[in-house]
Length: 168
Image (cartoon, rainbow, N blue to C red):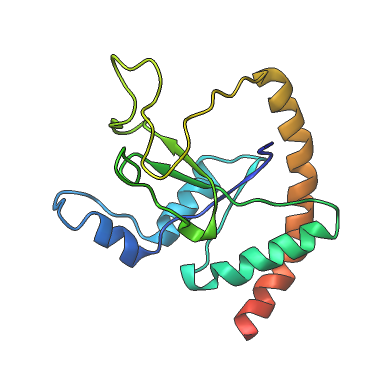
């Protein structure tokens, strides 16, 4: 697996409000505000921010896969989530129709890994963890080169695709 680009998929406002419903003091930015933060405050050449509704995602995903396949690419979507969605006892099986999950414990602790644990604990329903060895310098250079081509292609068809989605 070689990850060369990412699509940031901010949750819709209703989904985020539901996620934080028990946290009264939490400031919830609108989806438009969160999209603008990603686009304006954290510019990057390796990700693109999806600013449409969740309802439109399956059509968007199908079109991305079809269009990039024409250029010989096999696109795989992988869920990236926090440890609030993954624990030893549960994981979002098939979330967004993805077969793989990348989980981070950067903003909150995870029960499957941490102090005193040499390796992550196995999550129910999944195989044992695999250590991934990589050369970060080589991968960064490769990702930058490949992402430039992918984003050139995305920008070529995204405006036409989004217009056709609005017509449907």
